[in-house]
Image 1 (tube, rainbow, N blue to C red):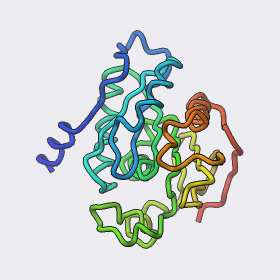
Image 2 (cartoon, one colour; image 1 turned 90 degrees about the horizontal axis):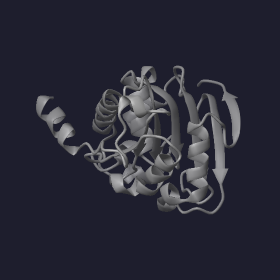
Image 3 (cartoon, rainbow, N blue to C red; image 1 turned 30 degrees about the horizontal axis):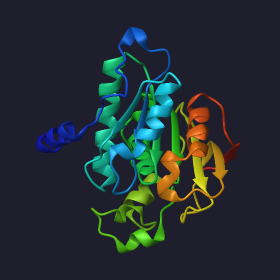
Image 4 (spheres, rainbow, N blue to C red; image 1 turned 135 degrees about the vertical axis):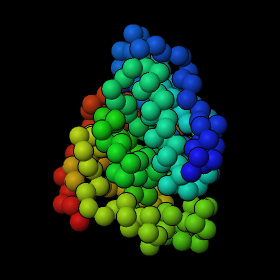
Length: 224
């Protein structure tokens, strides 16, 4: 575990587009988490939009395709950002598989105490069948029958005092993105999955959600 955590610390990318000291923070920090096989720079356009809107915005480079390991990186990133800014809580925006790693951190690593808003974009919240052909360390945890997905989707999908929003495109292959419990759902037409973090429509929706406005429809689904 020590070697793992040392590797995680090395892989973190936690410098914001514009450094913010505790006395300069006017809005809660936002951490942007890339998707499967991605890198932190995939979220640069969205980071810049949040920075322009007055948010201390950060990206993170995840070490691989294992959601459990990635969730540890996210937890460490949140800790570092809170220490840097003095913020009590942060907002998290995850693209694709990054939305699953982020939700694991919230649900299984105590992240609900440190996060005010969760936004996912194109995340296969109940799994993605083609991922069943991938290895466990290569994205196979997204398979609907993988123990990771079973555990993640057991009980309340929206725990804690966190505002949850899921956003999807009509072009997303995984069409099930809703969460049990109270959450905001929003569908955008015609944006290809890889382009979502750069899409003005997705950026506007994420900004609205982090700002406290549901960009779509709030639905309180029964917990299963």
